[in-house]
Length: 181
Ligand SMILES: Cc1cc2nc3c(=O)[nH]c(=O)nc-3n(C[C@H](O)[C@H](O)[C@H](O)COP(=O)(O)O)c2cc1C
Image (cartoon, rainbow, N blue to C red):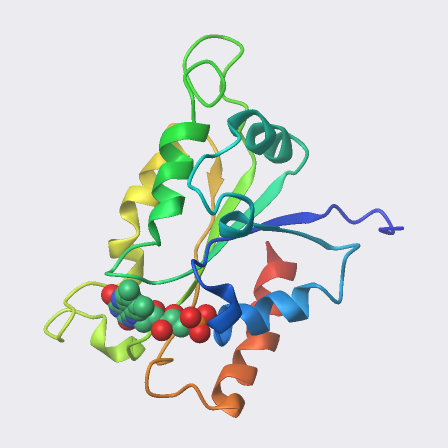
C-alpha cells in the first residue's frame, strides 16, 4: 500500500551497474521503498540498444514524477538516455497534434553522479560551466514536451573519493531531494 503517496519512477541509466559504486548504492537504497519508487534499469532491459518504445511510453503515462538517474559521462549522460529521448519522445505522443504532449505537467528531474569536484564546474575553473548549464539540452527537451522540469540533484567528487563514507553521505541527500519533488 502506498498510503496515498504517488510512486516516483526512477529510470536508471548506467551501462555497468554491477560495477558501479554510487548508482548501485542509490538503487539499493531505493529498493527498500518499493511503495515509493518504481526502479526501471534501462541498460538491463535494453542491453542490445533496442528500446521498446510503447512500453516506455506506457511507463511514463503511469507516473507523474520521473527521475533519470545516471553517472556523468563526458559532460553528458550515457548514450542510452539520448537514444531513449530520440525514440520515446515521438511526434503525436510527446509533442505535436492534439493528442500529444503526454508528458505535459509531469515532474521530470535528473539525478547525476559526478566524478569531479563541484568547484571545478564554475566560471574560470577547469570545466567552466555549471552542471545546470551542461544539462541544458535535457532542460530544453523536457520543456519542449511541456513537462515540469525540476532543478537537478547532483553528487560530486566521486572519482577520487569513492570510499564508502563519502558515497554513503549522498544517500540521505538524494532521499530528501526525491521527497521534495
Ligand atoms: C566514460 C566515462 C566518462 C566520464 N566522464 C566524466 C565527466 O565528463 N565528468 C566527470 O565529472 N566525471 C566523469 N566520469 C566519472 C563518473 O561520472 C563517475 O565515475 C561516476 O559518476 C561514478 O558513479 P558510479 O560509481 O555509479 O559508476 C566519467 C566516467 C566514465 C567511465
